[in-house]
Amino acid sequence: MPPTVVDLDDVTFAYGDTVAVRDVSLTVESGDFLGLVGPNGSGKTTLLHLMLGLHTPDEGTVRLFGAPVGEFDDGSRVGYVSQRATDRGGAMPVTVRECVTMGRFAHVGHGRIDAADRAAVADAMETVAIADLADRLLSELSGGQQQRAFIARAIASDADLLALDEPTVGVDAESRDAFYALLDRLNDDGITIVLIEHDIGVVTDRADRVACLNTELFHHGDTESFVESDALADAYGATGQVVEHHHHS
Image (cartoon, rainbow, N blue to C red):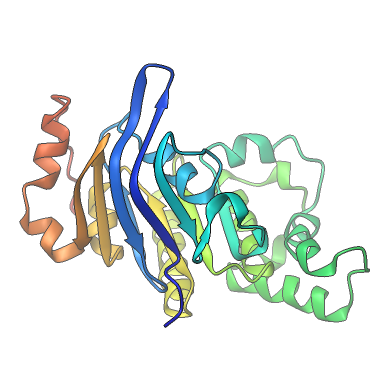
């Protein structure tokens, strides 16, 4: 059996006195498409950061691809597109091709980018439908196009896990649908996806598993059992926020 992709065991993390994530245990299996949902400020981004080793838990353990996350060193297996990636992308004076090529550096070491690397970069741009933008500066692209460039960079690195934090904020509906269709294809190709998305309808349409969080985990399981449960109301009720559920047919 391949090791699980992410294993969290009784993980707690606080910023000072404010507990962001409490006693969370969950496993992400290879090939999962996991949606992380919960109210604003519920700890979703923190949980994602814990999964990727960007934060160290105060209590509990995190394993990534079977290794303690602090010892995991094969960064090319993980593609992370942060919520603010597009803000930063605007400042980088690089072309789309150069951005995507960065995904190959882990494989090249101190060697040179060769024909196989260039082919991987071209394939990745083709996969996310931005091949025509290869020579454009990243800063000239729309938010949605920038997100695709960052995902292409992860694909070029042969990532096994794609972690996305609200990747379609500020992206128009048509581009968003195309983006999620792309994620479905990548998941069908065997890439494990962990997605933070505030639109619950998108998650229940696309993800095959859902983790519902508000500091503590209210649900972790298949999407159908999530939809039938009271987890969402319970999680949002814990902060008194109203649930906005936009259902897409």
